[in-house]
Length: 239
Ligand SMILES: [Zn+2]
Ligand SMILES: [Zn+2]
Image (cartoon, rainbow, N blue to C red; front, side):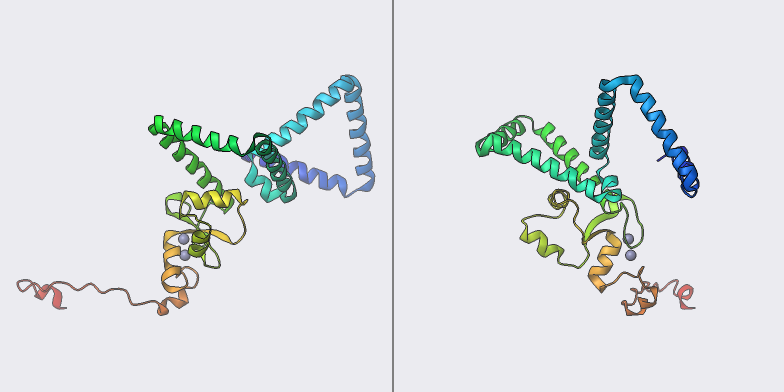
């Protein structure tokens, strides 16, 4: 949201709160808005009303499809409805075309990939980038421990451990296959983003020094730098 949109929304929200706090004023507001709606509807006629409603519905659906992460955060039920609808359409399509069609499509893709290796590689790359972006956005787009937000440093972490086991059991691998699995399963709970630093620290020591600096003493001592003894200039190092 731009600053201006946010400002307008805030202004409108305050104005509405003010009106709603006075029942009489609120009733008058509703009456006035009903009246203007009716007037507008009378002007555009029955067909016009239908057209407007259709346009509104279409806009809402298009918005929901393009703003899945936002929808999931603000309206989980609506998000679920959208998913159910998508899945129903996909299933209907699959059922109608049958298993042979699936095989045929796969073969066609493989043939095309063999004939256009460069374009296939490029398409795959873009697709996995898109999936990864969706996964990162869904899980907050930054390290849950230190806030690192450069994607080059980030990876999805299984909060209660067992990430490796889960990946093996589901025949996945780290990276794009796992991201696709998360995306297909609607970004399930129990995962978070961690940067490689915070992730490795947890793997090594069971906690990240960011979490609790007072536990630093549990960590091994930092390696000491031993200078090579240089006979000629040993005086410089003796103090
Ligand atoms: Zn981190
Ligand atoms: Zn950390």
